[in-house]
Length: 422
Image (cartoon, rainbow, N blue to C red):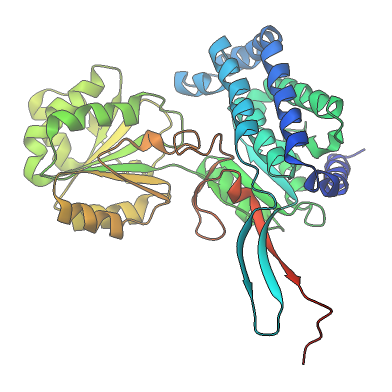
């Protein structure tokens, strides 16, 4: 059987399983999710052993430390993964929620009700926890899911999938509710993107290259959830002592994530005084700095190591311990630069000036805009959604963290007393 035939078979099975799952009660779905959480927790030792192979292969390939960290499982991370699935079980079920209702003059009573999207295809990179997070969110929202993870974490992803699908079956649900494409070649991804007859929507979760590949090849609707070129702008009124730890957190806490800081903009009025201390704090912790001509002159004069930024650096998602620094004239220029170079993910301002803050918030085109806070907060758990399937950087259907409600659509239920239209 060819890769295309295998993928079509998986997607067809998920399509056939969707209707029973959509009609399942919240209680039954929650029992299934708790069984999955328990199974993941119980398989911690097994997952750690399997994950070692992915980590060893990644290191042998020359992958950066930050990217290796991204795919590494630890007992704590496995525990958090299992806890995340259990937390999804505790969240309110969006399916069946009445969002609006009214009666029209004819006597027809109309309700808008949340319903599952159907079958969701998810193509993702590197992090094994995504396998569990995505499966849990899709199942809770009544959606079947077809998973296609990246080659770097294939062994870990496969093991987690096998644990999930076993728990799904043992909970009385069709195991086809969760499909897994084992082929990590481009052919496997392309085959999934051509299954418009069985898959209702596809979500890419990874870098900007993945997003564009999916958008260019999918025959079904796409919720673009990839690419994180995140900016922070330090406006002249900002408190410098408070800014430095926020910048450090945004860049250094986990630089391989899509919500990590990649571009730092500093207003010219304060650049000469602010930049040396702020950037030395990062370089002392191992961060590599690429700097615009003006910021490089300031840093060179202060003896802070940096290199000249290329044009590519100003729009780059580094995904590592690397940051690009740029001096700007004012808030207007910061907004213009951000909108020209971001991926519409997460951008923020550090400022004490309410007028400048209001201008920034209104002017920046991003799914999440922060005021005096780290971009690292763009996360389903941090937003109170439980886990998230990704961060949508598009504008239609859903934007920002994709939680349970964002994985539903709405349909109208119109109730009459044997009404006919006059």
